[in-house]
Length: 202
Image (cartoon, rainbow, N blue to C red; front, side):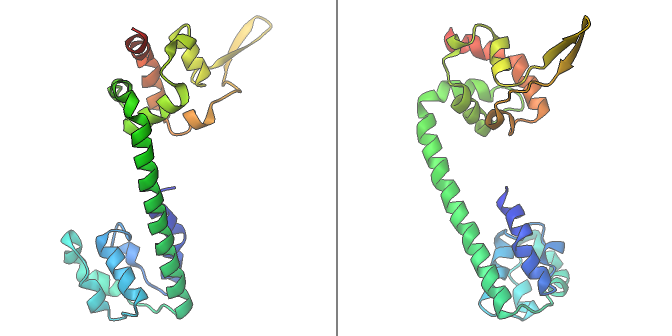
């Protein structure tokens, strides 16, 4: 789950419980402006004019709207919960950064393969890293591109009865490989998989 969405599920409820509608004005409550306002509220600031002064860039033009959105009252318990939720998000951000660094180190030997996968329309760096993590780079284990597509759960099965064939979704799926790839990206990946295979095994 995206961290902004995480806050919408938790922190936003706390704010709305105090009748504070910050998200109705600020598109990203966890942006620099929103975060500074939240931190100030946690420290006890209640003056909406002071809080609105934390607005930066385009949000500065919405100060009057911000003052209205920030009119509310957060009790001690709500402020405590808000502080802990922000601290939790900070912890998750730190953890994500550390994991990104580790992934970067482990992907160093596969720089060329990442470049090839990244050349596929719709496949970015993160998806390319996941493909390598799941499939590996030894394409000799797949006799044809079709075998690789089948292993990845991107080809339909066929159910035959009374001489009639009906396509069926494969029962066996590689969930961790499939989940992050939208259907359009899967189709593009299938189209390009032959090129990827030949470039890797030569």
